[in-house]
Length: 232
Image (cartoon, rainbow, N blue to C red; front, side, top):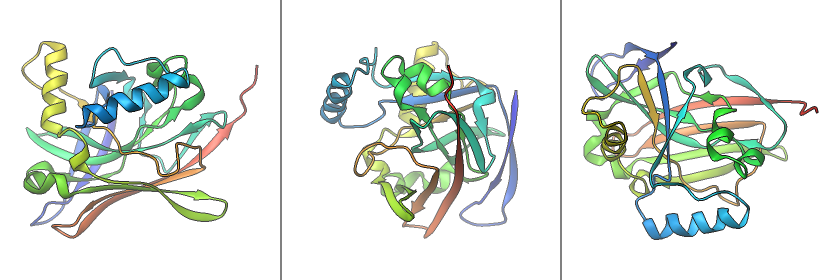
């Protein structure tokens, strides 16, 4: 079990704490709504040696101890990168929304997507919203991330949640894969990402933002990356 803490910021009223005793960490991959675009991306990655997914969407199980709220993380080698994703979980029977990074080893990805995700730690923010506060305008919410590149803050990702499957859809798909009807206690799931502007590349940090233009607020989180030597 990995205990992670959040400050929940409701649309109205005072903020309050929420604790997730994380037992199961799930990364929902291939979570876009446009199947033609997904197929095109699968073919692009296949040319780089990345194997095709066995199903779409695909639910990768990650060790719960790979989730962290530390502002600095360590990875082996220089060929990994992060990407912002919505992170959903339940607290006292209520669905909550935060953000996380599906940090992935891109070199290992060509051998095994599941392993490339498992070997990298998954940073998650310490703030959250109630899903019910944003559900009606979900598609208008924007995912963004920035990296430091050659000394400049560079926009790395930006796109609306309208391009991705909804949490309800992904939750239903995961439950179906388990042949279950209720969300497993202590489970958190990331919900897909938007494309990298200029291509996927490594960086020594990732600054993330989930921006709600309707309520005029953001969830933000930044983490730094230390690359450890890849020795043999």
